[in-house]
Image (tube, rainbow, N blue to C red):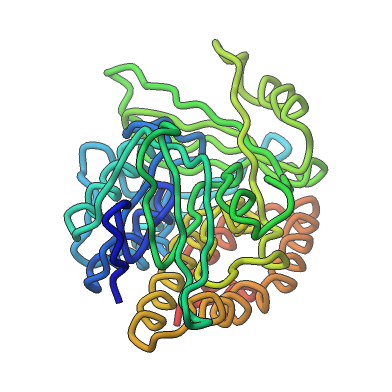
Length: 371
């Protein structure tokens, strides 16, 4: 079912965005034998503002032959919740996840996709997307112009929007009417420890129910990732950050945390949205990688099935999307309100609860397991 056109560069799958969601989806479709292209607007590695923790449930969704080098990752067994000048701790008998430097992790996952057979083109922001229908109703082609305007467009049968919360794929392609809807904001910075400071690895959380979020200080042997996320403006977050920790040496950049995606459109014809581009951050913790990896797996499965059966990927993906993300959204929102409320009354329960969430065994996410 390859597209024949001597004037364009042709692919089965075009993935916009080389972040974790896009790279994993590209790796899976390339492994299935589909000619896959990843378009990334920046050069890798690129800085990523986030907490830098990959939970156990997220790691379980990665391919078995993908591993993180120990020089920039560290297992985490301990969680602490800091509230009202008290510290409540929980230590797990097994790793709850890994702390990583996201620029290194993202680059390695993109390199893994290339090893699986995908092609990666960096410094190529998408500037135009055109959808054309073939002779049959189920055949859709996407002409994607990226990089400089004079460059030859790419054509793909399937298009994956994985360009983040501020991505433009859905907007340019006409899937969504606005570029972005921000439902939360986050800020963070990485602080390198002194060479002689080899403290233990620990995740410290600071619940902030009145801001609709929490702050964190994720500590490893060599660096600390500190940040704050909530439903208030970036300016308010920066002021609170200074009160909790210190005055940052630079202006902390903010990134959107979109979690209302389960009630927005996620696919149209052979275009699908995944990860933050689909608005799938977890409401309570703000974690994005688990739902990013889940949606990447669903998108790849939908595309592979559509390719095998000669059908449209969008309806297949929508079926997965509705059963996994939308059906679990209201319980997740309810759980978020309950947990924030309980943190004001009885914060001592939170460390174990957060650990249970990381293992995908909390009551409101227990039913949201992949496949």
